[in-house]
Length: 324
Image (tube, one colour):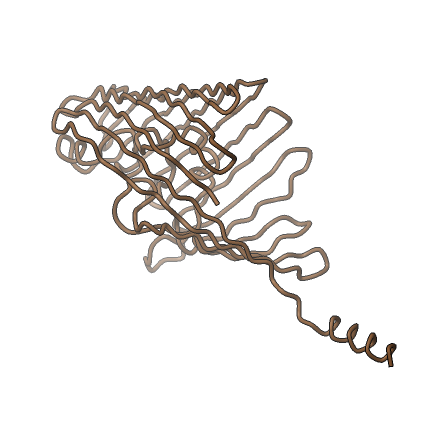
């Protein structure tokens, strides 16, 4: 009798379908900022919250299927803090050959390279690539071999009736102990191109990050360092050719981190007309970790546009983040 019960229990376990592993995580951030510019001197508040659902399933033979949905639950754009919510929605397979993922996602240039310069609380310091997630994307990331990883991606961003891929992005990343180097190149239909290289090195409590990007035919929407409204009012709808240099220093003392950062643009042309403008941003930020999940921060950045008719901007901000 006992043997029959045990055998039946084993048969039930063997016959049971494999269950997917599901996890839920999220972040809630509240920030306040005071923008000081000729046309405005006021405090504003922003909420940036999101939920991420992840699932994975062991397919056997070393293969794993996975899916991810990320939602901005405050219904605000994660970069500009306005407009419709953004989300990731992607599915893929990974194994010894690497990872293949399809769906809505960030490109390598923005999500992996340019974002190495981004500070908390304000969009003014973000050096962005494509500036938004992109629908109908497919990407491949190789396994790491001696610290070296390669990624390639293609994006269908429009409904234009042609056989061309609307954008393609490629990245090479190398990590060896305290050193990380990432190189990416993104080409968009219409001629817009961004080539970027970033490097970070950590020694003790100090981390140094540098980024250089060369950009051609980039629209105002991708230039996060200056106001699109100011550019439209003083220059008109424009595309820019420029190089972008960023330097960042993070110094950690226990639960506190002090960050100093600077970016400088060297504009070569606007709508194909040569210019010699050098907008720059200087930022300082202090972050205190209250726990592994909760931190508070305060910062200041100064935007010097160096462009006639476009106002300089000073921003003071503080906020709190909780991740779960």
